[in-house]
Length: 237
Image (cartoon, rainbow, N blue to C red; front, top):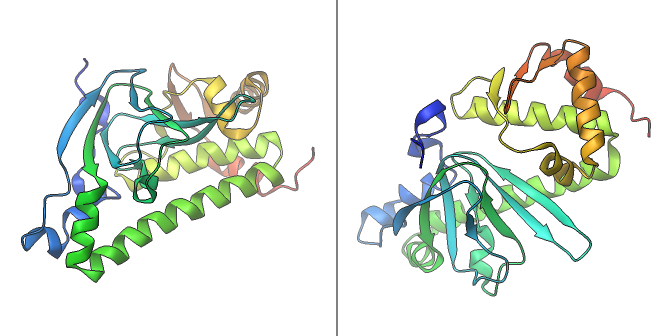
């Protein structure tokens, strides 16, 4: 497996969405350590499978992954996970996963059993509040994504996708102008509700206008303001 720190895809614990749990007073005052272990997943390996018990949260420490759902009518990519993101936040509801998480490249993942988080929550109301905030943000992101699919035309969806990735990498201390794009056009289409051909066409149009550059598995935002103009324009379907 490749060096996971290579290419700057590893984040400090302070930027991880689960860091409030790991750094809670409950963990420092006799509660169990949230992280059970760290595991490595090779490109294409499942972090968890659909149908597996929902009993663990997985915090991405290095690499990228995707969460997808197959509803019988095809696969839909729910989320792309960057270092610092977490998968399996539905673990606190019990039951089995309806979706699956797969490594898009070699990943290092912190494994957090749900029962340990629940024990920490019993020690501290602040820890409970932190967990609620994490899950509320995940729900808000899901609702915004659904609204985007219902409202925006194809160029706007792709522009929003690139600008969102730019912001997320910047929040982690990396470049907002040049970053990895390990997911393929098909996966991007499954995330944005577009065909592979449409994603390729829109990206090619952006590149032809000189707004972006597309080295292999990377993207460079040459004129991000142009992408913002596309996103702000009235949708034409």
